[in-house]
Amino acid sequence: MSRPTIKDLAQEAGVSVSTVNRVINNAQAVRGSTREIVLGAAERIGFYGLGSIEHSVLQSRETIRLGVILHQGHRVFYRELGAALRRAAEQYTGANVTLELEYMDDLSPDHIAYRITEVGQQCDSLGVVAAEHPVISDAITALLDSGTPVSALIGPLSAQGNVGYIGHDNWKKGRTAAWAFHHTCRIPGKIGVLLGNHRYRNQEINESGFRSYLREQDAGFTVLEPLQTFESAAVAREMTEKLLSEHPDLCGLFVSGGGITGALAALKDRPRRKDFVCVAYEIFDATRAGLIDGTITMTLSYPIRSFAREIIATMVKAHKAGPDAGAQRVNIPIAIHTSENV
Image (cartoon, rainbow, N blue to C red):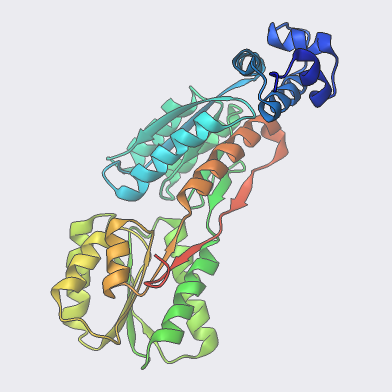
């Protein structure tokens, strides 16, 4: 078969031959949407000048600068999310997206607020993982007032303006965790709860949903006061050991956030009880191994790739919509894993 011609491409795209020539030659007088149509047609028929058309399309697309601030880069979840965000930015087709990605080791409110201001001033749309704190709220408010949209990632944030949110429905997430205890614990008893910090609204909402389900069901469980891990594996291990020592009749542990690897290490140090239930978060090598060997009963996780794509798309949408359009809010489906589907 002979290779497709410009005439074939024009017919496939539903445009004139002269329009195809203008796209190939990167002429200015062609709408971006028309370039995209011609590019799609060229890919379908295997047109030989695909590279020139791709270049033409890229040149015509708006360049949007996105900034994302994540927690510590040594944590597997954030490292994998960062890598997925970079891929999603490169593959985004609606604009040329440049991504400024920062990992924060210093999680103090003052430092996070400072980086929100610095990164936010250099980008068109900002996404941030942070705890709720007045200093952070003030920094977000100032950025919103300057016309830069802000999207809270994973945990909701507040400010005087509208802050977007991209993440789980955390109330439902907590109720799902409680459902797991209700349906897998043979005998109701005490449940320990670990969270990273009381100022992480996602974890506070998780706990609220968790307690509301068990109250509604009148299931006979006693939910202990949550212990903070400060997002540290070492502290999580210490807090888990404390719970196991002080409450030998503990029937389960809900790790709502912060330090899952430390909690796992503490659980593995004790003789395994078949009736002990542990619900944790995220799926990576350590939690996958915990599911397989029975240390963890269930994980409630983010689908990393689709989460990253949604973050990029929503942040671009927030920029294009403008400051008067209101906050963009997207609920990400919860991925549930057990030993049978990892």
